[in-house]
Image (cartoon, rainbow, N blue to C red; front, side, top):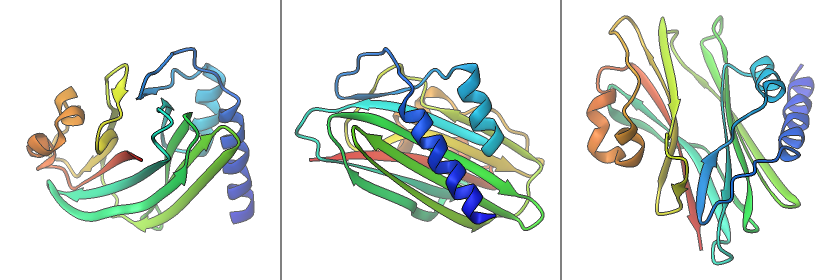
Length: 195
């Protein structure tokens, strides 16, 4: 079963690498506008997914992508499922999650493709079942490559009521942690481009 899942993920990453996004970026990331077919492929293998294209000057040699976990607004898991790899100016990164509710587990998949190189990392983690969840991504059309970048979030709660996170949460994260203070668990996808 694991071999089938891993093979499916690898095949899926290869398919996404063939996708084109006509947006011209300059030292920035942009969330990919997926076709209906691509949305179907993602939804058949994951509960949540985020896909970003990036364009970086030659001075940037690597990309690092990871997930930080917060509980009631406090950092409880730093840089879980981290992937760092060499890049060659432009590429695509993908983040997906899938849950096994019966076993109270969530699986994170991170993949990066840049020209002829690709890398992926998967991690499974225990998570108590919650009855509400929301997710969102950085709403900027072009997300500048500048320091640590907040790309997306997945928030879960047990009956506290939930609302979408503000655009400022993604652009000024440290000053907007109060937005997640009432949520049982929040996973925040972050990245950084390294010279």
